[in-house]
Length: 299
Image (cartoon, rainbow, N blue to C red; front, side):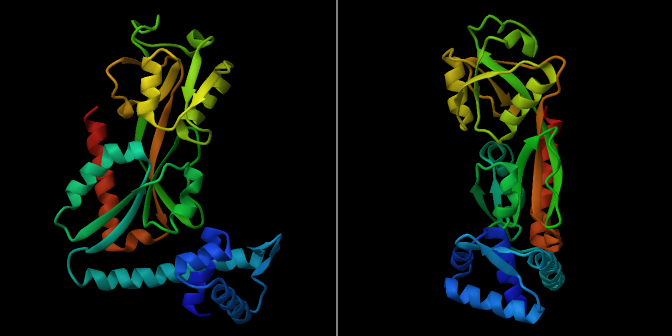
């Protein structure tokens, strides 16, 4: 089986449609379809089946995608080994990050990589961790976040490592009756309006987890994904919010930890399996681990 056609198949698995695959590979949709038909003949099995007006992978197609990952990873490892004979790691590494994580870690990582020959091309992607497999179609490394209680995102096609745990605290206006305390219980907030993020993101997942543990159902009145906006709304007295500890910066809010409930989010670095065999990617991963350790030590 031709390796380029295996790449086309993997791209289809990542992107979901022939049109998106064609756009990513700078091919026409008909050329993509033709390559997949040839690959099916080479494999001797049906790889695609109709799904409405689109196509989807058959069971055999999904199995071949996993094997394609192995083949393409082996080629990448061979290329990486050749790179190691050319001296220090060099090259471009594409990194996707959620905005608050980028604000915390990216300056440290860029400083570590300066002058090394490894160039980071950073992109902010405000998407839940479920989007990681799709993001890895366009990026070499993805920094994502998840609720402490959620499972790690590793899978047959994705490798991940947890590099940092960040507590999530209650944020309220300085004028709030509870603002003079040193901690708070969720049962103290039964009648509060909550400002949260969109569903599927760790902060909202934490709110739902806390509600499940305590039996207190929060009344969410606004859903905003910009923490600066959330802080401003809270500071104006329109509700309370959960926020990651390192993201809080508004001087007009008070931060209180919870009692009786462990609330936090985990930072995870994700790559395709075996991508860390490439020296440039390994160097970037190491820089993120060191940056996270530095943040953790400074608490």
